[in-house]
Length: 543
Ligand code: TTP
Ligand code: MG
Image 1 (cartoon, rainbow, N blue to C red):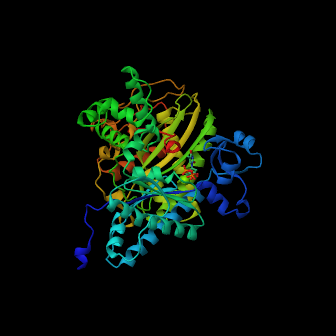
Image 2 (cartoon, rainbow, N blue to C red):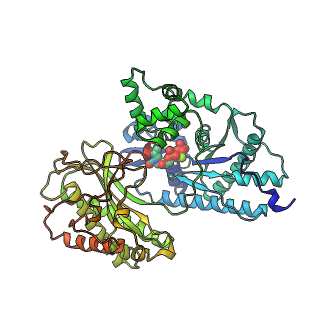
Image 3 (cartoon, rainbow, N blue to C red):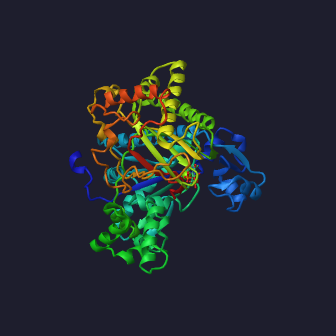
């Protein structure tokens, strides 16, 4: 048979792997402290345990959960070893290490087949999870034949579909080999979920922890999902639950208990989509949620690439009421961000076009407000220059820009009263790669498009004055409604002057304004800039 005729058909079963490192931060911390291998360990950020090793989980009989206060953990397990996990660098590095092993192993597998190269999409999810679409690899292996296929790992569910069974058998063998390879190379253990969709693979990965794997056969998946609380489904978040619960209350229904409730209330056909879309005010989300509640997930594994889409340095704290304290905290964030931007430049040779500054005041709950401005050119060029002096100057420039945003958009100044609980500095909208190093000065991107709200991000509708009271509505409260192109995004967020439509010129203008800003009165007229609201707890509520 010719190589071309051997190619698998598009209709072949999907095979998705979900990988999740075991007690990730704890494993990374213990790897560099081998004497702690058999001791109970928790990783702390501030006074909270963000994770613990499995020895601690066993000894504490479930009392040490993620996000447990350290005092509770110490009461449950007085011998517990506490390790500070506030510096995320080792975890980021371990994440890159694992990803490199995965890529090398997949590459070797494809090469081994001798059928030419083909891509295998890997999608990162957080620091320690990754989806891999091995459908093509599985199909090629089945075509190549040669070994007895059997399931490796725990089997959940059932199916009468032989093609699916065979595909998942092969996928489970691949998962087992890959897990062994990762552990051999990195000394880190992990779990795998193997199924036909990201949804089922993700549910499977949590079924047998740690250091094990589960195959989810999808025959009864709909029934299984129907009986679960929808919040346990990845993708069904607090906001969606809140809107559906409010709708249920208004319509005399009981509290939402299972995924089946959602399907029953709204219906599973087109009518169901339409009525849920009205409640969620979002067609795509309604479709996704209804499918999710019926156990269907056709979403593809999207290749994430090795470089992160954005970098964020965030700190949340109990209270910050003094300008000196705010300056100190901003400088720490700026230092961290500059280190990462310089490393990013070394690795990927790209430059960020957007600077975001996030802040939250007491009373805002979990919601932080984010303001975006063009990344000042000075920071961009200093971060790609060598030497300690350039690094120091970038920290100063970045702190100055962030403090300006805090002063101008959040009213944080020496003469104002405020109580902040979060500060973040972010860099995003990176130029593509090394070949685009100079893209910031050549790309004809308009400032309006630069500031256009990104899909899926909400818009801040409030701006808080120094005393924390509501000041004015600054932008559309509807996250899906794009801001008018005539909105004042074409103006400088600092001096409110009309900006050039060329991003590079606009960026330079903002740069100059920022430098001048230290000597300018804080009572300057405020401009409306693009802003996004994000939930700080999103990361913490992934599961
Ligand atoms: P998880 O994969 O949720 O947890 P884990 O890897 O520690 O444990 P498990 O064996 O159950 O997979 O999260 C990965 C890391 O992310 C975790 O080690 C610490 C960090 N993290 C936080 O910083 N805050 C959080 O609220 C959670 C849940 C995790
Ligand atoms: Mg994990």
